[in-house]
Picture 1 (tube, rainbow, N blue to C red):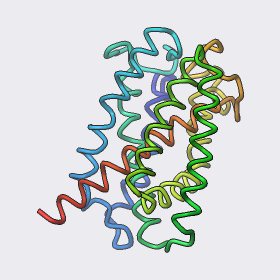
Picture 2: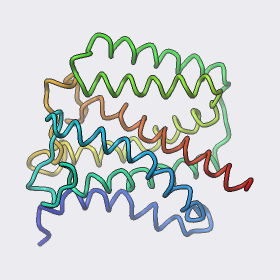
Picture 3: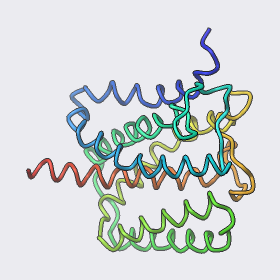
Picture 4: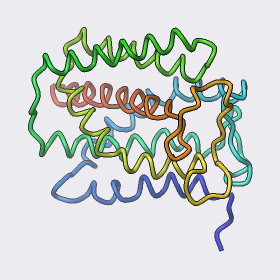
Length: 234
């Protein structure tokens, strides 16, 4: 019988293993982008892990000792660090596949209006919830990212990023639902302090997790695309 301490590690593995195996097939061949993935995921993981470590230290969230291994790096279980590589791999694989097979059906103008409305919602919500650290910083950082993408006219990336996020949403709900105790486990693997988020949940997943995930994946996609352009032209 597998020890419960491997719970979080199994979530990482299940999110990673199937996209990784499909990466070698002729339909996707995502393994050819291994260099761009490693550099992109590492570059993005560093600031997120710093953020993660600070919030763990402040008890904005914390990790169950029952479902994680005992080894910690800057207050974080090793599985949490692997999360920032396993999840981006699965999502960049999906992003690349969607970009390869799905044409663009929406205009830049429509995308601009949509994302401007999203930014407006994020900024207003953040301002009125400045004392809720998870809400405030997630929404503000995501606003900065989206404003940057709009100003740089990165609508193609924003289009496929949105499609990818919609596509992986069921996987995100399943994996995050396990981590937050909405499915399977008796208690959450990742616990959230109710003082620091809005309190709205989907299958016990704080609503902020979806925006946090969009920011994490958006930055991975942006760096991944720029690296691919660089390696193609160099």
